[in-house]
Amino acid sequence: MSVPTAPAGDGSASPAIDIRSVSKSYTRGQQIVPVLQDVSFHIARGEFVALMGPSGSGKSTLLNLIAGIDRVDSGSILVGGVDITTLSESELARWRSRSIGFIFQFYNLIPVLSALENVELPLLLTPLSARERREHAKAALALVGLSDRLDHKPSELSGGQQQRTAIARAIVTDPDILVADEPTGDLDRVSAGEILDLMAGLNANLGKTIVMVTHDPRAAERAHLVRSLEKGLLIDDNGGDGGGNGNADPALHP
Image 1 (tube, rainbow, N blue to C red):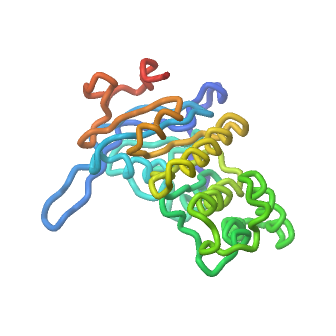
Image 2 (image 1 turned 180 degrees about the vertical axis):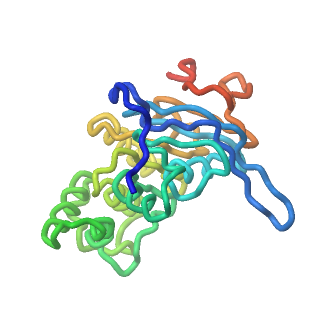
């Protein structure tokens, strides 16, 4: 089955992520709880976007939808021209392994594996040889400044070093898009600043499109664009409902 794509056009002008009238609800007992309501906007290629909002506003749900971890109730999401809402589970898993790198608040490293082995994990789904996988993992760890920690297990690393390892794992397959859910939420201020520097470098030097959920205004300041959610609605910088606006608001650019 072929992967559906957006209509042909100028690839350089097409957004990295195009969210079209997306709604999502969850069932809690007998009650249906709306989480996102008719959200539309796009993210340009090479952009660094922060999603902000109070707890329960829908920002992590939106991140999971963009990453193909969860499914929309209605609407569509095109990522790199691929309408991921039309993919089967197996197609979605293959697409996700090629296209998305995940960075989590609590690192999600395997405790019994070394930093090198943790970073190598996503490559097990590729046709690379064992030697090639090892070299790719070493290169990713070098990029985040951990060449001297290859054989260390997570318990032997600081919080900042664990997050660097997690970022190396996220970039080892060279995905176009990185999604980060509170990547500095479990770090002290110095370590958080170092992680944000690293993410900004991946964006500026490697052209990675980054979508980051954060509660921290200092972290959001590092993004090029901030989009805010409140009660499942996208709001503009004046607090109005931006749910139906399909374009990023230039007024939000610093």
